[in-house]
Length: 196
Image (cartoon, rainbow, N blue to C red; front, side, top):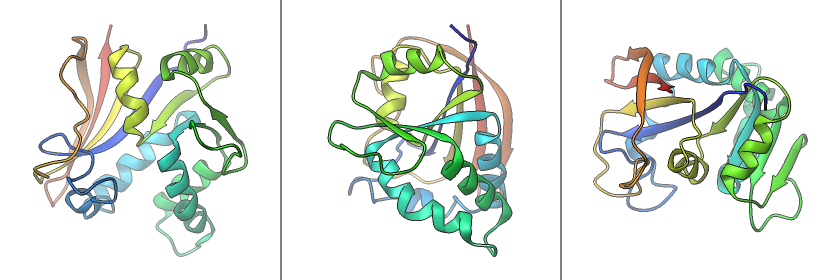
């Protein structure tokens, strides 16, 4: 077993939701904070040490439609473009029960329990494994206490409905803040490391 760290990033509202009550496209309480200076610095921090990106199918398909165009756009913010180029070039693991063909180059599909697949990834290669904005993968990792670091962007709005990241019944765990930065709109980027 190598010492690969498993990290995850997600944007959350004050009431702990990663999208609003109307479904995954209901990002109104989050989207206006995603392009702030704090959010962009946070985005760079997220991927710098990662050599594998892990995504759920929905995010993989959505990201495929957006980030490659940013990678090719010479006028894009350099931090957005850096992330986009990393995402296009990095090894990607996409969890799906329905896809039969990988949606990107350098992508493998996985149809297996999340904890088992992540344990397999930890046993191979170097660098961090980043679970990239995919709550469907982050939740089982929290349930099995397999996350080592969380990058959270806390948006100062209450969504009032929609799924929460931290469900009741998670095993107790203790975390240490290793970075915190608050922006002009009240958005706060925090990095939490698991204390073991």
